[in-house]
Length: 354
Image (cartoon, rainbow, N blue to C red; front, side, top):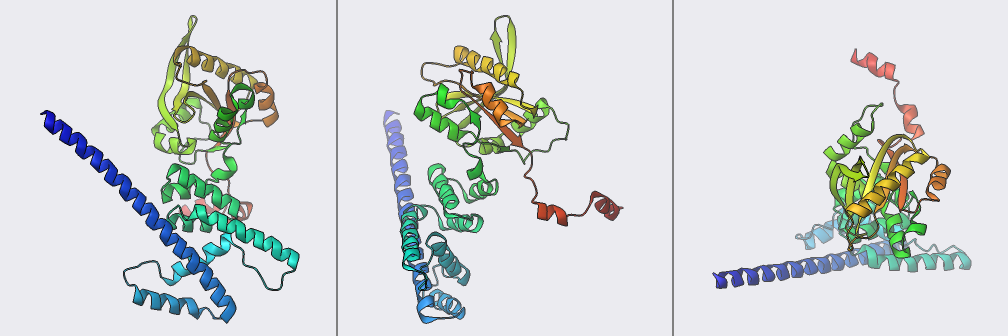
């Protein structure tokens, strides 16, 4: 029996090592392939610029490469165009007619592009295609590249985060972290919170209340955790805490594995009011006293409101000594004005149904 146990432990260890080796090999192969794609994209740009080859060049090149390497799937005409687009996105081409001053600026951009290459070849080609298709500038694109590297997002998660404009929302919550947490914890906590949170996966009536919102969020806990971000672990809802002779109930309780602390989330379906911060402060204090251990960092509170006046929120947090953030939430993304103008009126839609 002991020998069987030793063998199983040995086999488990070997399997883990093989899997790590396979992962390292896959990453290395991906980087070599993307390095080749980058070089090929740059060469196609230069050849078309030097020789004035027309649009037929890519079609012919695709045909010849696929005929020579039928086992490789990356030489379609569409993929070759993406290679060019990929390189041009991160490395603006130098135009012969620009002035010396402008050329220096373009050279600087190209050097920045080469630096970016060290990051973008670390993620799969499909992820890169999504990023350059959906992002409008290099800073935004590199933000998502680094998020993929850091969190290991799938392509569908990456697409969801870009379409939800994560990079404009992360770290935007009103908070008092700089005065209530150590500097490193403060920076990480601030980046952990967003403003606004987008709950477009919910189906709530216009007059929904806090309990409706809470019910829907916990019913869709997987999507809720995705919107909260990496590190959040769900512990429960309506968690009871006894303070003195009274019993209070926390809307939602989480533990954050990177911050190493409890996170108390309170939901408000209306405008933010200063007294909400005082009540959340009591909850944070109670969790610190009753749940927190010596291994845990200070508990953090997050107040989610339908609307909040930023200055009122800042005033409300100025004398609060427990770490707390205040953010808005949205149920759906707003439609652009030009799209709204092209949508039919409700009366027209009703008439069609009739």
